[in-house]
Length: 249
Length: 254
Ligand SMILES: Nc1ncnc2c1ncn2[C@@H]1O[C@H](COP(=O)(O)OP(=O)(O)O)[C@@H](O)[C@H]1O
Ligand SMILES: [Mg+2]
Image (tube, rainbow over all chains, first blue to last red; front, side, top):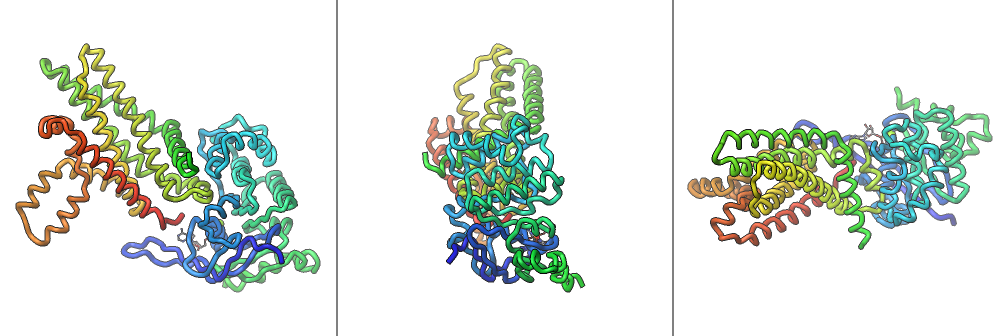
């Protein structure tokens, strides 16, 4: 049997929207179940507001589920040992503008429990991996969106995590950055890392994922295996549009 | 050094660096320098009382400007990390929430200490330039005033955590600051108006920090220089505020 990295069992998330007198409940996930096995690349596909970021924040322990059960490496997302084995790229990562990429990595690497010496020796190769080696002496204030995204990936890889969770890793980037990040994802996966990424871009997920989870209105509509869109004539786009169309009416 | 202690130091010093790189730093120094300059003018006007006026007003003005800065910074610091999402990069790592809070509090204490040292340095140079010697009590007064700043900034951070609004936090902190300087008068009033319904008010007064304890001149004149009581009060009050901050922050979502 293969090892389960992530397991969602009927996860429910209801946000509280602050209201005038009382906070109003705002449901985001309505009984979501799926699992991810070691060395898979799994995509989370959905329109804006489908609940992708919510699922990813649950994985990273930034928010808590109101129902159901979530296990990562068989443990709770709050477990500190588990957190040390995850690399997380948030949607649109931000870095203190006055820091150089190396200083930013030093700060986050130390918070991941690495010694300053370990981080310092790892920095050049990490920056090369994400294509920032030419910009080591610049401040983050001068960074473009694509460069911030690359640095975001670098901070997620620093502690060599087994499980990489990326929220919209390529949205809004130029074609070169998209290709670089796609190649990086594939190469990290070939090293045995498990990768879970969200996107609203069908073509991007189609190129890297072995499996795509289609999310619509806080529920899983379907889970599509790569063979479905690579072998049969039906494209992932057709499958996806068919999945979300009833909701749009 | 344990892992947890390292995290706290790391977050605290990062917070200090953030301040030193911010525009607030420059703005604040102009403000403080201006206030000290005002006390200088007042000193000149006071003629024969020049030295005393210069010391007392300078101290009061330093405290006032650092108080304004401290509640502003304490109400903003976590909110800002939430807005920029840098908090995601921290709390998704093996860092306990309690340690994050301790780091953020340490960051404010360090920042206000640096600012206080800088402002006091300006004040002291003015005194020296005017040819005045500085009494030893000056340094105790600054230390005790810093204790008040530590307390009020921990309160400001706590209020921001549960009102989730920086504006109301600043407003409430100003009220607590004022009330805290009149606790004995308030207590006197409440005792006169004795009644069952006042228990709630009395309890509220009990929670309000007693800043009068940190008035160095009072300590010297009334208890003959017993600084142990205010020091103990400070330590227990700040410890309680740390736990309150951790408690409120424990279930917060981002
Ligand atoms: N902090 C929040 N408070 C209230 N509602 C939220 C919050 N975050 C997200 N939501 C709502 O939850 C739903 C799912 O959001 P999200 O997970 O961000 O979607 P996606 O990442 O797929 O665009 C949306 O309807 C969104 O408005
Ligand atoms: Mg999203």
